[in-house]
Image (cartoon, rainbow, N blue to C red):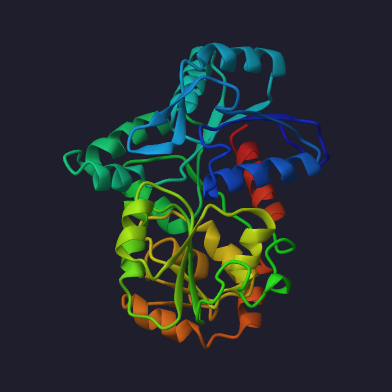
Length: 347
């Protein structure tokens, strides 16, 4: 990809298996990337499962896998003639795009969003993590660069033999996620006692939601999101409020109206929800693992501790202004500019 300091109408194709109606950090990141790139003067198109034949992912029906995507993808590439191709995921669309690019000698970049080795092993313990890492390493090896969200993930992947790794951080919309949306919570948890301890994300085994639900905390635990574990956990923890999938103004209000955001995951590569909570003025409690450590470091807007219950209680005393101030230093425009620099480096 050729790039100069002047604004150019370069064409960028983003290939992603993760797309609406999925609601997760990968989808939000890719959507914001396209929005910012367009605002910066680039022409962006997506290749997604939308309007294609799909089937549900085994054990995770909310995720749809595209069937036989190669023909439609090849047509899009031939018609759009992109200057840069970015493969965001390792699913069927990503595999097809990789194959086309290699056959036609087209340069492409990839990104590593999800710790699939841990996720696969959590669902199918018989599958060793090393085998999944080997498959992923092979997928990303031909790319001009593999973009990762944090320095610790970069070091981790390097230890597993990945190469050509570059950093691509994430951002948050501080206009949308705002303390101004705070309410008494009557709209989403009528009659529930405070404090509200909030979790937002997939309700799945790899997210470690049960560790949060088992905590002995005052007030009310609020769970936002869908996933294969929801029915089981909702039956086992009837005192928690399971609100299902929330989006838009409703989600922003829930963030701002909660008292502590709890992030029990030990496997996330970044945790975009951390920034969304902080932008809403809500302090964070999490384990001191990669992801939270990379995003938050020693920030006083969060408490990171192996005793998650103590972290939740300690986070209650964090001033909400401190949280907001931290989030304001992370923008989606900066993330998109970093993405473009990565493309330029590989051109």
